[in-house]
Image (cartoon, rainbow, N blue to C red; front, side, top):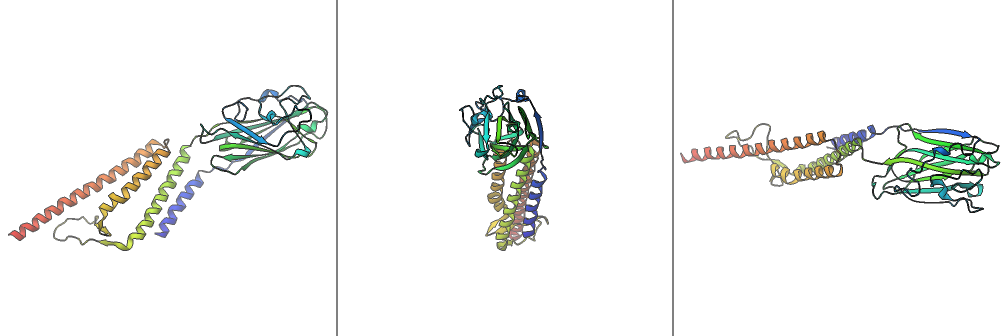
Amino acid sequence: MKENRKTIVLACALALCAGMVQAAIIQTDNSSNDHDAFVGGRTGGDLINAGNATFLGATGTPAFTPSGAFSISGLNDGASSIGGTDGTGKTFYNTPQLPGTITFTLDTSVNVYGYDIDLINSYAGWGGSDATQANQVYDVLVSTVGSASFTPVANVNYSPFASGGAASTLVSLTDSTGIIASGVDQVRFVFGNNPLGAGTVYQEVDVIGIASVPEPGTISLMSISTIGLFLTRRIRRRRQVGASIMPVRKARSCDVFSESHELYEIDGVESASVFSEIVLPRVNEYAALVKSAFSTVDRNVWNYMVATHERRLQRRAAFRTAMKTKSLNCLDAFLAKIIK
């Protein structure tokens, strides 16, 4: 029994591992001596843009505000001023404030599975006399639905400017699998020290993605795990009651039972009753749970499972009927001999 349980658990683990795909973050860097070279790529329709239904709020380290122009809201307002040294719509972190942390919270009240992130764009640039303020250094971390911890997904250190005048940079993050992270409910940026300057002026950060949905592959793997747990519990239960299982004496006066069928008693209850009163309700319970929780299960697989279950019930019902009929015939024959 122990070996069977180990085999089931191992099979479930291998099935889950088979669904995992090795991911690799792809970073694409761009730079220009024009402080607004990449302004046309900014979008107001990303997941964290202020005012969008997917965006719930942002918290973090305050931006440097010597003139009141800079604000952390400049990271996700959808645009920034075109003026070379105008801080409106921009966020500036200087060395004393770094590392600076901003956490964007997504709305999961409707999209309860979170969001799939497939692209992150960060824009930096300044039209003053310090090109180093276009260098970008930050980490990206995500939290998934139901988790209180953050997982690192990318580390950016793009510092093309050591000196010069106006400049801008664009860093794009994608993934070799097409999705950077799934089931996300929070995105955190930790801005680090600029190794070549006194801080960075970030013009915008775009987090682009869509609402997550359960994938058929994930559902299948979870279904396998559920079935494995059920079988493990069933094996454990058999082992626990095994000592009390006693074969019922076979009837030898007539062919009541076939060689492949033998009644058993478990604590005085026939195995047919045990199956119908204990095992079947549990199977139906698990089947209903899987069906209700994963409504997108492949219908062919589900129909096959249902058909198999119904055939099993039909065979057992036919066996019980035949057994009762043969028992009655045998009893009639026995009584007839006594009466004679």
